[in-house]
Image 1: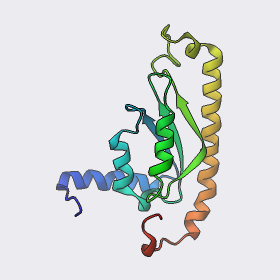
Image 2: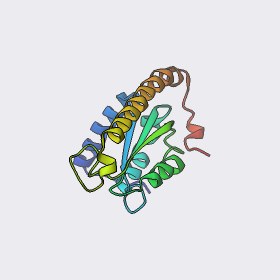
Image 3: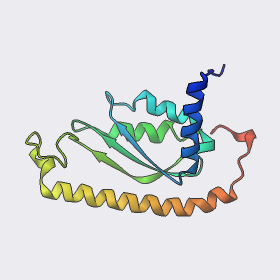
Length: 155
């Protein structure tokens, strides 16, 4: 049974949907929440699904306060694309020790040194350039692909 929303909630949902439909691609930023993607992010893909995300590129960026960050990447790639049909880039970003990287912090000096910051900045720029290229290329796919309601959910 579909959830019914109040008029105020539906207005917010519709407003956000309009903005998401206009997007040519997405940067999906996920904190690592006890080794998982937060439920609110997973719910985003369930709420909006194919009419918003289908055949649009997505760059996954994970953040972790510690040495983690890889689990959200795997979880998003495994479960959020099926019905949404978002096309995740083969590249992703993981920002570890997020409280110290790019900050003046002595907590993790190796993450705050110039070479680490330079590497993460260059890698981020590379991934963003890649996202723009995929966004341009997938516009053609979206223009050519007809959504078939018979196949509304992934296999």
